[in-house]
Length: 447
Image 1 (cartoon, rainbow, N blue to C red):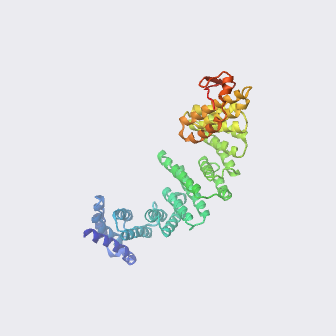
Image 2 (cartoon, rainbow, N blue to C red):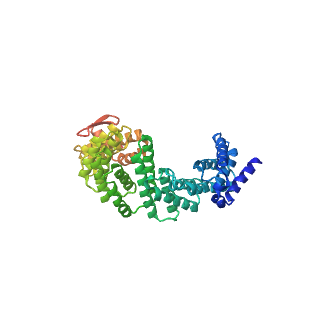
Image 3 (cartoon, rainbow, N blue to C red):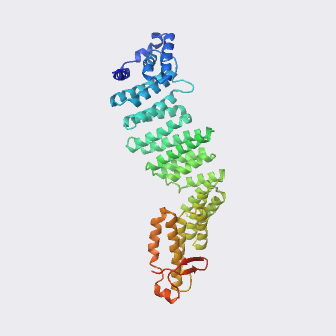
């Protein structure tokens, strides 16, 4: 019964007119009574005795709304407690209404607070709208309006979590056809500027890491939204480039966005990547350039940047990736099988459990078979070492199983037959060395 009465009081509080009481607040209760009620609810709240604190708090809210800003932060805590516990959907909705009303009254009386102004409160209100009413389109629109108002007042001082929630809410509304796709890009650029400003000011390494993760998550939101108009992206980012061209972190975020949207083949990406390398000649910057020049079919420049990346990188996984990609380019474009194998073997030295370099070497051997030896039989012996590589890939890297098995099925049909092997005096199961620059020992098997 007590619980039912309390719930009723909480709901009545939501629907009771309160505008007139605010106008006369300071006149209705003197400061001593306000202080008494403040002490009563605060003491109960310290002990998490919410049912004892709510009455005095409500009196303060109605009669002393301009006495202390703590009234509103405490009220948020109290009502979030009751929202979390409430099982009745209608009562919970009414409690959320009251929660949002607390934000509105706080802005009325403390909207010009120097540390927590109206824009800050609007951002927090928007977060709670998203928290409790994320499945309601109209509520999401209200949240977006709060986030936008927060940003319009605070600019890059907008809270990071407000900025991220803003982008997430806009993404849902765009997906539901409630907002134009261009709005998502516009908000992303504002959110990116907010996160960049926080990262630049932050001194705590863990906080910086979290902000960078938030930035990456925002990039993924845009990338996964289906936004694919690269001309619009580049046009929108062109002006932003001028703002960040002397900021390596800003350039890197731009490059990551363009890459995530598959818009990394244009002039803007090239300018940003080269400028980024000028500012910070790092392994990551040179790798981005190598990838760019591959897409531009400028393979000599790509090779130069791959080699720069390898020499600068401390990360062996990145070195392995560069060696492997350089091996592919050397094999497919420069038609140099020996150097391609060397680069692939270098990749394996950096990452011993990676199957793809073995598959590449197997394909190199298979293609080189016609150039090895003086007879068809000798040509065909090269497939033995090719198959060895495919099987090695399967053995060490489960992700390569399907691709390696396809190659095994393909090239097994080109192995020598037993009659030819018998003619050359070589028995199945014998050890055999494929010579020349390949120079690998294998086991004889016939088809």
